[in-house]
Amino acid sequence: MTSLPRKPSRVKLGLVIDLDICVGCQACAVNCKEWNTSGHSAPLTDINPYGAGQKGVWYNRIHSFEAVDQETGDSQTINFPKSCLHCEDAPCVTVCPTGASYKRSEDGIVLVNGDICIGCKLCSWACPYGAREYDEIEGVMKKCTLCVDKIYNETLSPSSRVPACVATCPVGARHFGDLGDPHSEISNLVKARGGFALMPEQGTEPVNRYLPPRPKQHQKSTDQSPRSLEHKDTSTDGAGLLARWVDKVLSA
Amino acid sequence: MHPAKSVIFFTTGSGAGYGMLIWLAVLSLLGLQPADSIYGLVAFGIAFALVVGGLISSTFHLGHPERALRALSQWRSSWLSREGIAAIVTFAPTGLFALAWVFLNENQSYAVGLGIIGAAMSLITVYCTSMIYGSLKTIPAWFTKWTSIAYITFALMTGAVLLWFVAVIFGLPQANIIGLIALVFVGLGFIIKLKYWHTVDHAPATSTAESATGLGKLGKIALVEAPHSEDNYLLQEMGFRIARKHATKLRKIALVLGFIIPFVLIALAIYGFPQFQLLIAGVAVFSGIVGIVTERWLFFAEAKHVVTLYYGESAI
Ligand code: SF4
Ligand code: SF4
Image 1 (cartoon, rainbow over the protein chains, first blue to last red):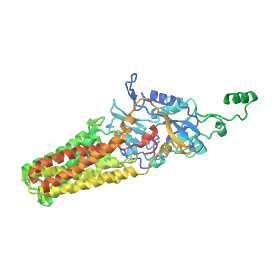
Image 2: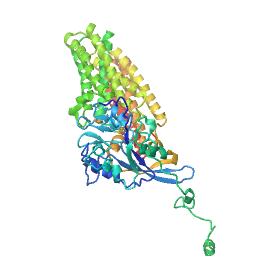
Image 3: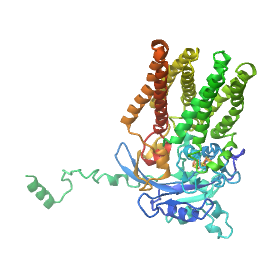
Image 4: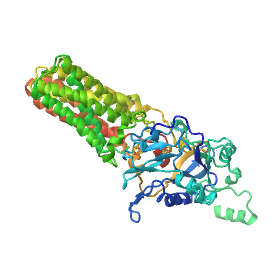
């Protein structure tokens, strides 16, 4: 059924990604691929996996952005993992003509039923975030399942029942939980750190949240570093006697 | 957006076919069509060939064409589903209208009633087609009412030009009136295409790299490293880029071949050289086809998707 659940689910499972500590190591993307290539929407096929022009299905991709302060010229690099945000008002679900795309009423997870998907790709056009990748070999759409086959898996130890990306992140930049419960640990984290949604103007009401990088502790420390390699330091302030003498000789 | 051939043919072909079906009914109602079997066979034959060909071609880009019927199930929310249902339902009245015309030489009374119902449903179908694109907020160049207005106008325009061509071939006495209608709609199409381009070229950005990352507070956001060194599905499907100078040239080609030349030629055929009408009409149709295909190619190729904000675009 591609209409969204009539009553929004109370449980809203999702991820919170801490952009302050993500180091962009790609471990989450790799472990995602590893788990999911034999998971709910398996396999995550690749074309030319070992040759030039390789291409394949990934649920999670890590971008790197640079933020440049327009006043000071200070810049900062932010590693930016991105996967399905399991939107509340998911346009990928409502455009689907077959009912293959659906949002679960019990926990809000957005899934694709690969047995009835016709591979029209319209859902990938409707998603603002690039969270859906078409499997050219199987001819169906694939996307992050929030490891639905792992988080409820009773054969795993309770601590392992989290999405593969969360389990593997070596710096603890990824958190999983119920964002529908305002008092859950993860909701408190979002509140404390000022977590935000991506492209709210698209009206998709994403469940996942991102935590902003913390402000730099030593703003001033960048003042002495050159802005660019062409930077020439002509002042001799603070230089020792010998250095000043050498400077004088050389500048003569 | 990647301009897939199958979708270009689907939208232009089925649009023209529905346009012809609409005019066949409306002109019959006005008593401007002969209830002639052979003429009916050719006119309906072309119209249905375009509609059916377009629909079949639209299944070519599916990963599982054999499951295509499943696409009819989600009409409550999906414009693609609605389009499929509308297209199939439209075959009933238009098909009966065609049968009455061709086999019973009847295009008045009950037949024209069926024709008008079919015409209304053809309009609805074209509207549904346009809304597959017009409902996508992620592609601001499509998310405007001008998308639907343009699709409907171009269906009526191409349908009128083709029906005029058939009328000229058959030497119908009403050919000039149909030509005049075609002339009006080519002029209208020209204005609407310009209006569409003006609207999308001047629309303020809906999303930016800052809103896509939520990091605008830190400053101006730029991509430093893409997540993958090779191409992926997203970039091939949504990241299609067309060089600006080519876009400008192609827009001119679309305007000249799709509108200006057909306009001038139709006017010449009616008022200037009635003795060469058939030849002129043939050239007008050929030019119009190349022009409208170019127009549709641009409709896809020039449209930018907000996902490209994660791949280096700064505002869409
Ligand atoms: S992120 Fe994209 S694929 Fe995931 S629910 Fe939202 S719109 Fe759908
Ligand atoms: S590609 Fe599959 S899941 Fe996506 S809209 Fe089409 S049928 Fe639905």
